[in-house]
Length: 407
Image (cartoon, rainbow, N blue to C red):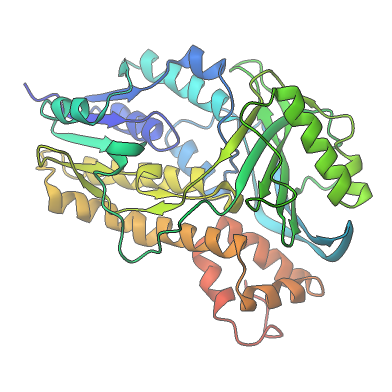
């Protein structure tokens, strides 16, 4: 008996997709590696900033539980620092505020709501052969998280370079006791030759017990001075290392904000790296059966560009619309290609280009960043590009940095 739609992965793509389909009356099975309690009591895995268009998508799907609770991120305080001194700095405002909520909080609430609404949830982490076997019982299988053998079912997109290694080594810490930015801005500090330090306010805590925190992301060039974190370090040792780095390399007024910092909980740190990848959206299982890929399974990016959660949310919305527009299928390979194209061309590819450019700015972007410190409107427009990465081409192809500011 065909059981309709199966979604593998309960993250920023899989969960909203499952909710949208369930609320539209479709029969859907969500396969998650952990239940809500395990997610809530686990460790952080990354950072996330959600920009207004993503927040609007969540509101439209009835998933915006933190709109009035999460602190607003009103823009970016950007600095380039050499030897502890700012050599470039400006502030750019978003047209509408962004927000960040701990993914443990978000996913635990969304999983609970999904089950309460009658959704079919299976706790499993199936390997490729099992995914292949299970897929025979569904009209459509959507894979939103994949690694190793399962990821290899999705061919690399030949139009994108395949980096040999991650661009950065990452350390994530969720903190209490950090002095808030006086203007509700996020901080983006570029340390040339070393990496970046990114920080912004957010919300953490089990659903119903949320509280404010500061989310700190240290992006280290592999082998450089910021690359000091080890997977075997205790959380407290990671905090000590992070505070020492901030004191050593940031201007004193920025480092001072973190001197009283403490971890929000025992699971408030993570270290590792992200291998960027852009894959074709239709995978082929060993049996030859096609499956639709979405979110990180198709477009995986370093978190330094703040695009991952937004990209995944847009994928969920696009895929839900395509599925609901084809109630009787058939969900064959050409349908999958067609369903994925609007997301890839409208969001994912722009986000991937933007992330790569932020981590390694081309000359044109560097010139615009320099010009922005003398032009508040240009600084605002540059900040807005984080929220609208498709506008990046307007910066990259700019010929005259003294031209009229981008709107």
